[in-house]
Image 1 (cartoon, rainbow, N blue to C red):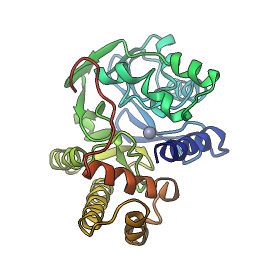
Image 2 (image 1 turned 90 degrees about the horizontal axis):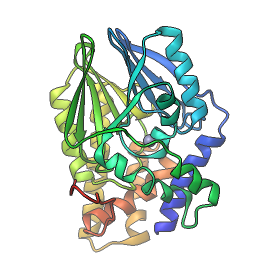
Image 3 (image 1 turned 180 degrees about the vertical axis):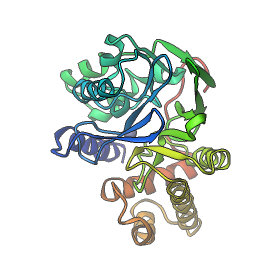
Image 4 (image 1 turned 90 degrees about the vertical axis):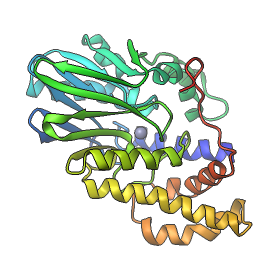
Length: 311
Ligand SMILES: [Zn+2]
């Protein structure tokens, strides 16, 4: 099971590395607030974004590798010459942190939750299978670590503009959202997937649903930048929250009926496909989502553990 999970995830990464789709599209979603949205299979590997204040720029996530990160830097430079002061990594996964070095070289301080620093060069290895090649190991070991870490929250003032970074549970145990209050924008990182099935490899869906409920209550009219998919509306975030709830309900019901393994998956898949078959990554992640949620509900899910904080 574990190897198949890894393989499926690896496949998504390979697709993202080998794809031919355009890398990303920069979309203005507020005054000085931009999303960099990449289609499935693009070289960028995930979504990113940036926020321009009166004295500098904050970049949110850095794509999967240096090349698309350089393209993002070039796009930012078309809009402003203000210094890139900070990068925020929303979580440790390679598809959001692979370009850190490009922005560090440009002078930015990399900011993230303490678990991102703890897991960046260790947990990312699992995406290359049970026996990573030397070049894959070297790639993970070369990832540029956050310089500045926090446990719960940090506020960044870009001159007159406030950017709030908030630690939230659900997707990996080391995720943060980035809020721009004056533009009513929330960068959700991979806590928000827009019309896409999520990667649950490190997830705790019970916490995740609570996080989404909190976000929806506090930002009930905002624009959300997803980690994968398009820029998200409040309705998209609610739909995604309901996907996780449906998955948990379906799995719990099947477990109550005594089902497990392939039998459990076969019992649930048709309902999920009816409701979510048109979403991105359905083929990649649906069976894994079921198996990983079954493990979580059975108390058998392995998730990354922080070495020093218990968080
Ligand atoms: Zn991602």
